Length: 255
Length: 255
DNA sequence: TCGATAGACTGGTAGGACCAGTCACGGCGC
DNA sequence: GCGCCGTGACTGGTCCTACCAGTCTATCGA
Image 1 (cartoon, protein in one colour):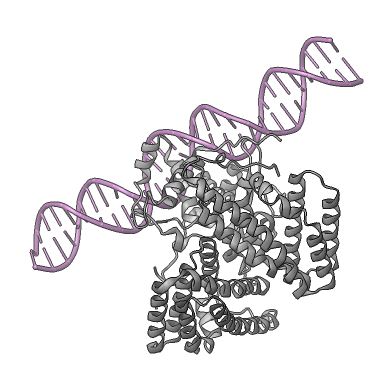
Image 2 (cartoon, protein in one colour; image 1 turned 135 degrees about the vertical axis):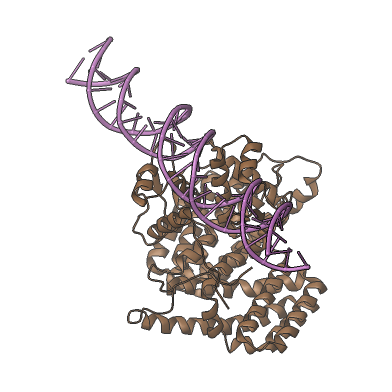
């Protein structure tokens, strides 16, 4: 209900500023960052904070630091990893970048059936039990938000059951990208979340170890919900230039 | 030929140590890290270095830091993103973690046909031109290493052509994971890299905008090379307990 | 003209001082 | 005795300053 207030530290602030400037191409690839000392002076913070921020940029492969030389901006499209996605989803006005959103939905659409298929093969009865329990909870759930939470948990269990750590981590990256628009997703997926039969059937396929069946079942559901999101994005795109649109992102949902 | 010597900074070293301990479950999820002051004393480095390392761990979602409280280890399987993959591929003895490797190969196997398909639709003639140029270079290439470099570039162009930033970043994450075993990959893929016909055909499919054809073509090639890697991993697994095995990872390939 | 070198940058490390939260313990008031 | 609240000893957050360690360039001398 209440949102956890985000108490961003100084170095977080510096990181975010630099990150935004790189993502928005205001700082282009190949360009050089001001020296740490100058940067700390310009931003009115300690050099320490600047260094912590730059270390994070370095880890995200957004800049390259050379001892004794200068720090240069890298091309994040070539170098950065999937963890950058959350930073790309919104521009600085808080508008959704529809092309980024479409990319993410597409990737989810492609991976989900495979995850389900692998889960059917590797998951075993324990995975099926967990899935059934979640569907049982979905049946009695009333609030759409609760339904979505459970649906998400359903997929978490599937990803776990697939026994594929790469799927798992990619899934985590995608999840971190969803989180800021969790409420929006609840609205978009409203109808699709009602399709409890699809979830139930998928759980059965996993129990039977039916790879093809699970994939088919997952594909059918995911295609439906993906299309719902695509349609929203199309509308959003049409209205983007006129309306300032939905509130900017702010992380919610306590652990 | 010569490998760039890695001059790891102190904070990098600290990061790596903590990261390894978390990945190896030596530091379990929920456990608390020693305080920054104590940690800096134990490691014989400045608190500054420790803080930079912890900031990076925090960004990778491997720990949670609470102002005034303690820093606790998170479950990286639940929280961390795809950027963690390179850290998971090897254990501390430098042995390949076969289950992790299989996961990565599987994900590549699943995504590649989709990437090719999307590239056929969105890539246009410019993508096809670039692909053809690479295949032309492959024809005259002799060294297996050169062949592999070109093959990799081929996929880079395809990913670009797909116009999907999520694919692109996931691909980058996977690439960073390959890099330490680049030479090993060259051996594993030796035969498959000779299949220039597959590359040429794929380029044609992209030029024709044939989504299904491109996917089919990509799948055929990727399945082959994936199986080659799976076979190697099976062998590796059998011999893992007896042989200390290949040299530990060290980044190579200058930018 | 070319080369070595000095100096002025760059980032890297250290340690100390202090601010700002958190938490547990002990004393005070009820 | 019970419960509240303050205090102090932790925690991480910020800043500063000094210095080490590379890199680059401009200048001077052979």
